[in-house]
Length: 202
Image 1 (spheres, rainbow, N blue to C red):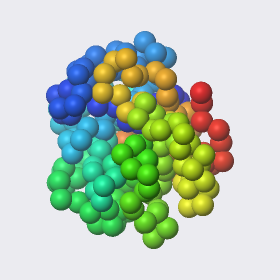
Image 2 (image 1 turned 90 degrees about the vertical axis):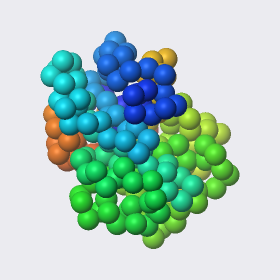
Image 3 (image 1 turned 135 degrees about the vertical axis):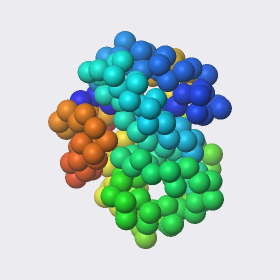
Image 4 (image 1 turned 120 degrees about the vertical axis):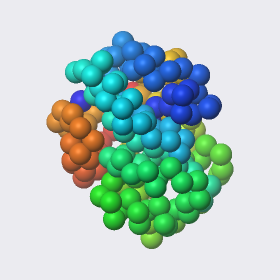
């Protein structure tokens, strides 16, 4: 299933310019089968998520969040937990929380803002790392792949879309056809076991 796991909308991410509905319509037009909204420190409210899922079925819409901690940005998927919206996370605490709750965590666009990764991936390895996105430096792809191989991380390709024009270039081919956030977690766990050995789609 082709799914973009890193999408923002203007109602919950001030840096985005297009609505959640518009982002979904663009993803459908681009041939994707699902996306995850990962707004900055904001989950999509339950009622809005249910409405979007109803209006755009069979397109899949998943819940996620992007959290800044220890000078890095982290995607958390598969959890509907209000505590994730806190703005005072440090990475070790976030990592432990996601692990305890059974969620999935990925390092978003490494090297976007700095020449190094500030978190200790050896002690606190995420499940995945974004190797390609609109905001991941192409010149660092080889180094990202080396980090993934070293720590056994899956490689993600996501849009990090803040507008319609950013959707459709990057996606992940996930196993199965997950419908719910729990099923997405199962698919991501399968993906994480094998995807770091595969070449992401161009």
